[in-house]
Picture 1: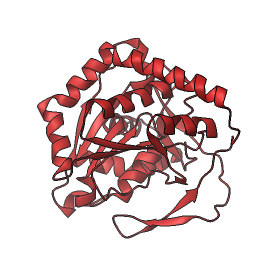
Picture 2: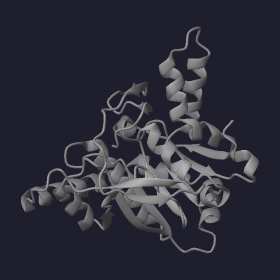
Picture 3: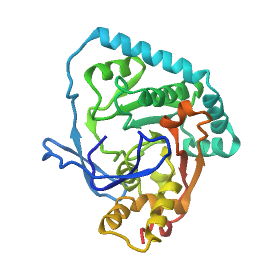
Picture 4: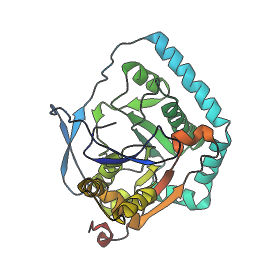
Length: 287
């Protein structure tokens, strides 16, 4: 994932869902960056990206494709997936998707921060769920994927599975010019914050469906930290990195995902669907 300022994130390597604070490495100076305009007219840079591992190995690609197909079959036949589909099709959630779609026929899907699908099982489970969602719902359209750790072989496999790999590191700053489903389980908090900041307007936010870390849990964590007797400077910086996440809670409908079994806990614990319904500009005030 993108190296960030100070970010608040869920630790993917623990089974108890504890929060950790992740500090960034200093990034290199960006070159040849393209700029995008956010919902508030601000310009943000996008960094051109190519895989660091550019070696093409058809044998590795074949093995990885087989791994993912096996993983998809496993997810498809699981109680977790049936429960997940039931949640998406319950009237309360489905009405949100219909509202976001409006007169459009397809909801574009953007996957950020998927991780290495060759090296780890959790990213394969997450990718499997995303592809199975598209196969089960005719109103889910093309899938775009990005993570800076993806290799050339992984990119080829993603393309073979019908996905497009982005050539720019958007740093989560995609503005939803059309109905968009952002699939971002267990991403860094700053990535969610960047996404919200870039869409911080009534029209844009109403075009977004987000699957990712529970915003309610972020709010609870920050509230808990600030009720402690001593609050460090780092805690204040962390709050700044989740400003838009906390502000969005005022107009967010959140639906928690049930992992059902331990097999899917690591990949989807503390994940939720988020739908944003700001009705007026006053709700977008950050303070």
